[in-house]
Length: 253
Image (cartoon, rainbow, N blue to C red; front, side):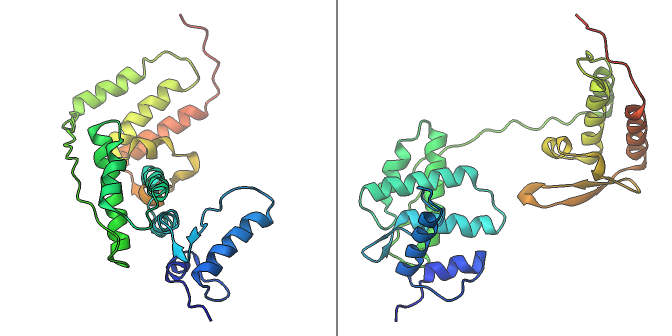
């Protein structure tokens, strides 16, 4: 009887167990059958590419991404990089992560920063696989890139007040434009919300007692943010103002 596939078991721990453990070949065949049963000619997300009974790098990459995404990481850019690397290595006939292949693939990057990120992603992938099979190599990052970040600018209270006043003088290209920007600037300054979090707020996220519900924040989590009484009062005034009937603005040149 074939032994359960360790890679399948690792994936099952993240996405849930099947009816019974499967071997590597059975796991791969089940994925192929699942894709063909739908009548759609496409590669299933968890297609275990099997060549001579050996799990190929494309399947390793999908397993690695599935496990990390199950932990809450989005990995948008990482998934693009690792799938491209796995296809590049597979085209060379590699079934393990090789330093020479990783460096050659990373070298094709368009800039020092891109080459650094490419090799960094492969190194993390290789470290994950090396823990299971020492045949996989972990490349050192040969492409050193120092990203220079500008120092954050801290607005003084007077400057924040000037921003809010300026927002109230914006051209009325749509109703409530001035109120939206003034409230947005004040809310971010009072709570420290990320811009994306503030833009994602809805009226239903304003809870009683001056509490904001922040949905789908970092790592897809939600949290509650209490408002200072002054910010809560300002928010109530803006909401009341927004509910008042208004006339559409005349065309402004």
